Image (tube, rainbow, N blue to C red; front, side):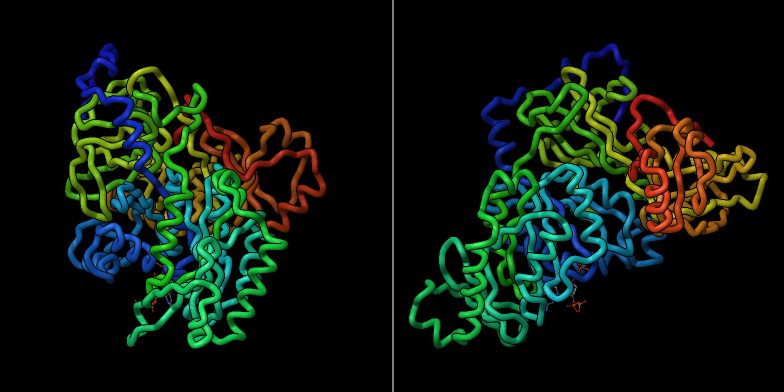
Amino acid sequence: MKAIPSNNNPSKALQEEISENDLAEAVDRRRNFAIISHPDAGKTTLTEKLLLYGGAIQQAGAVKARGEQRKVTSDWMELEKQRGISITSTVLQFDYKNITINLLDTPGHQDFSEDTYRTLAAADNAVMLEDAAKGLEPQTRKLFEVCRLRNIPIFTFINKMDRPGQEPLSLLDEIEAELNLATWAVNWPIGSGDLFRGVIDRHAKEIVLFTRTERGKQSIERRLKLGDPEIKDLVEEELLQKALEELELLEEAGSEMDLELIRAGELTPVFFGSAMTNFGVKPFLDTFLKMAQGPVARNSSDGPVDPMSKSFSGFVFKLQANMDPRHRDRVAFVRVCSGRFQKDMTVRHARTGKNIRLSRPQKIFAQDRAVVEDAFPGDVIGLNNPGMFAIGDTLYSGQRIEYEGIPCFSPEIFSWLRNPNPSSFKNFRKGVNELREEGAVQVLYDVDQSKRDPILAAVGQLQLDVVQHRLENEYGVETRIEPMGFQVARWVTGGWSALEDIGRIFNCKTVRDSWQRPVLLFKNVWNLDQLKEEHPELELSSVAPVVSGVDPIAL
Ligand code: G4P
């Protein structure tokens, strides 16, 4: 990839024209989603089953096996090797029934970082995966909130029905009450655990029977019309009766199926199944593909950009450094939003106005990479990034546009970053500034300017570990992390003058962000609520307002 003088008009770059029909066909064929779940709910298992249908992997166990193998053979990030975790979230692309599906992979709990949130900014749909015994769990709730910011459609898969679980009606109630999201059950379970007999397909009015195979790993699906006399030999009368009564209740008091509400993220279709035994996964995928939205128009400085627009555009939602430490390489992940992307095309970088030739775009499947020839809205490409791209950057050909930035998500972990060796201050400063620019962590400062040590603010502990590790390995500085004991941050919308009006605030520390804006840190939500009660006039925001075009103050 090469920056070329900006008086070259990117639209004049060598590009094969694509007909409107071909572009429409490519856009029409694409679906993109991320799975949001709490660790152990079965995301890896479900992903694997979905990939099997897409023919992207040949055997069950391949996803895990890949992970295991990576720990042994890859020279991926050193930290990743040491801890045997997967820091990166990548994209898995596969075809199923003539649809190209992009599954944006979000790392699990122990790997949790802002990257997880940012990946959701590139998704058009989300699959919310729940363990039937546990219901909603903390990580799922957090990820859901991020999906809510953009009102993307949510499809719920309630997993592990082959194990004893909570009452299905309470699982729906929980989603409705806690997430303020209406539910519509696509199928309804008959029993659970040892007594799980299958589901009632509401649309087809059929019972899909669940039969365990010998090793209990794969189920055999068999369908019978409701009312078929054979049912009484296969399903206990009592269990079926209970399921039918619950369904009747839903028919009377539950929401109706409404595709518009699903697409608006206000109604979630709910599927019951068991990923491990592969029960209900294929019907889920088939229905999901019918209901999910294709690549959507995204908001930009010029209003929403139609994916069918002939000019290419996309935005950077994730940066990954040191994929290969020998080359210090960095990859920028770009979500294609409109038009056709082609290898070797010249695009303009909205933030700097520079023209860039994208000569080595990559398609990334887990950790494997291949050069990509072209890509369409909904796809994700990896670009080699010699420090040029930042999170939220827009790339375009044709008329200038800039996509809305990706917000900084509310940090929950705050630590002083100490540099015990003053002689390495230059490197320390360079490292902190570069890692902040890259979006590895948010950086705050004490209001007392004489206290120069930065405060690292993150959504997951992993981010702090990565920063320390990279400062040592890439910048040669050993650092010390000192936790501050705060858990909540709020930006003061009215700035410093609003704070002055309030006077002294107790149980709270005021700090500055990289744009010199005031941020309040609290030990807990209780202290925050107390302030809100005492000063309802003070406007606070849990996410940092997006700043475009203004450089932050460096350390
Ligand atoms: P995660 O990626 O969300 O963290 O979850 P993962 O798929 O690794 O699944 C977590 C555990 O739950 C695994 O068990 C997996 O086999 C099990 N599991 C997933 N789906 C189902 C299901 O539908 N029914 C049942 N009964 N279990 C399910 P494990 O013991 O940790 O691993 P393994 O020995 O099975 O590989």
